[in-house]
Image 1 (tube, rainbow, N blue to C red):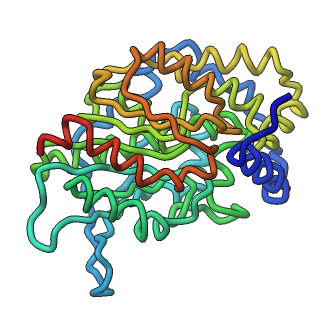
Image 2: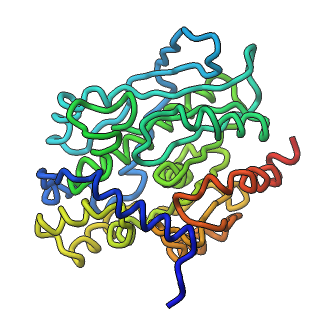
Length: 340
């Protein structure tokens, strides 16, 4: 057996360490409530939230803060009546969506890139200090960072850590979180288009990359997408990703074995999603040694999506930041950026 490279090794170590994070089991079994989510067309699961939301723009209290904070009421409407009661009560804090917007001090540019962060990230400060200013400077676009449900300011009371309740064996809540994330980014897209941006793209990392991929599959689409270290093969991720061990263990405890899990996840239309954004308006970034989202599954979906532009980076899922310079160079080489 070949020795693991450094990327796979780091992913494996962090996957094992995550066991100290996901100590609390999920006691809410909603696997018998999945009927409203099964065997749908993707457009049924992810309906268009409509036009631009009413956005509140917070006054900057810190003159050194380059970002402006936007907030709005999430347009997400739960499919499950039982979940709707939770959504309106114990998860009320999650109903406010947030974005952080970086633009010139006066006016704005013609294009904006919306970026969606990864699972378990507590807030936007890390990207705001690194990745987002790099996009802004190197790509010549304005940038907005969209916060995922159950993360950061959207964390309801009771979570042990940011994003704890996004991916769990409470499958109804997990699917509602995904659909809410897509809804909130679509609302942000509508807002920025209404402001006059001529081009709106979406990038995302890990879970955020999955959201970017789903956005490429429903109208109105972004003008381009850049999913990074992501795929939509949920069934395989639950079985193979060490960071999802708690989810799989709790599903086993609920009596949902491997075959039932696979049958259920294949009836949810996420993995069957196909893009409406042309291949030449996509750039995928994938890691050869990814320990969570396996390279062969990324390649399988890449083929199904018509072989969009793809950059394979060395290392694994958690060593992704080491490749940022090369990723930016690849993005700059895309016709949409190089012809600016």
